Structures are given as structure tokens and as C-alpha cells.
Length: 240
Image (cartoon, rainbow, N blue to C red):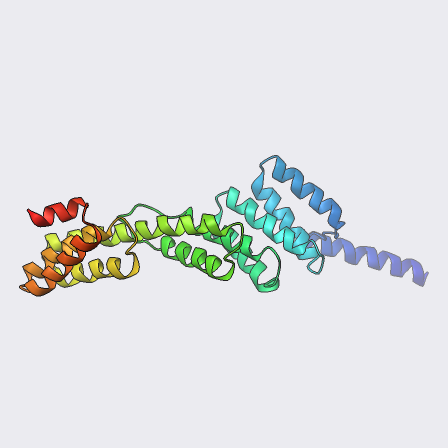
């Protein structure tokens, strides 16, 4: 009688728990992965990411765990869920800092920021984060297969940031806010001198320093423009 009572009591407890929260059994890792890849191939990236994360969460010590996080982050990236993808790459870097795929994860993280870069007239924000991430990749893994692409993105981002600074400088010059304009222009010269904005920045500096009555500084930037960009349209404007 005691055994029968114990059995019914156990059943009662299980029924009571299931009414409050669903008991999810641990699936075999191979089954979770198969389902995740199936969702991924069907381009159902949100569900694929969820299943890959399930694989990593339920089997965190498995040799497949790092790959599960990578696939989850990549699925989130393809789903344009960049903020979540960044968090997933953070988890990867926290638990697998020495993994062979760290370079790829850094590149993917950089691309998550890069895809969010907006109009040049707005705050650069994401472009700065993307630039930092790609630069870290280049510095840490100079021979990585992703480094060449990262370098190309760095050039694009530096031009973008320089364009944002130039946009601000032009506005400041129209308002005769010379101190702010000069600061933006000098940042272009120091931090983005290889960009397409450099000749204009040098020309605008000659204008700004002339406007505030410092002809020696204006002439100095004018000489820099002539020496480094003799064929530039901004050099031609200087001579007119």
C-alpha cells in the first residue's frame, strides 16, 4: 500500500510541476545539430540560431560547442540581428579565447558593426567600433585569410569617418566656428591621412587659419598640400 501511495504521490508532483513550467528533456547533440543545420539550409536563420545555441548550452563542454556558437552568431548575422550576434561572439571569445576560429569570429563581429554604418551626416558610432574590431584582427592575425578583407574595410571606414569629420568642418566654417572646424580638419590629417579627404582638409585649413589671422600656419598647410598632392583640384584652387 505504501508503494502504491508513493507512486501516486510522485505522479502528482510531476503533474504539478508540468503545469507551472515545461520539463524539456535533453536531446542528443547530433539530433540538435541536424535540426539546426536543416533550419539553416532552409534559411530560417532565427530558428537555426536558437537550435545552435541550444546545442552549446546543453553540451557546453562538447568539442562542437565552439562551432555551435559560431553558427549561431552567423545565423543571427544573416538574420540581420546584429546586436544579438555581437553578444554571441562575446560569449565565444569569453569561453574559447584560444580557439582556431578566433580570427573569423573577430571578422564576423566587425561585420556586424560594419553593416550598421549609416549616413555620413550622422554620428559615426558603429563605424568606429567596426574600425577598431578590424584593426584588432589585422594586428593579432596578420596572416589570417580574413585580414585582407579587413584591411579593405578599414580603408572604407577611415574614408567614412573622415567624410563625417569633413561634413562637420564645412558646417562649422559656414558658421565661422573656426576652432571646431580646425580641430576636425586636423584630426583628418593625423588619423586619416591616407583617405580621399586629406587634400580638401589641407585646403580648408589654409582657409580657416587665414580667416583667424594666422597666415604663417595657413601657408604651412598650403605647402603641405602642394608637396603631397600636386595634381589635386584642391591644389589648383589654392593657386587661384
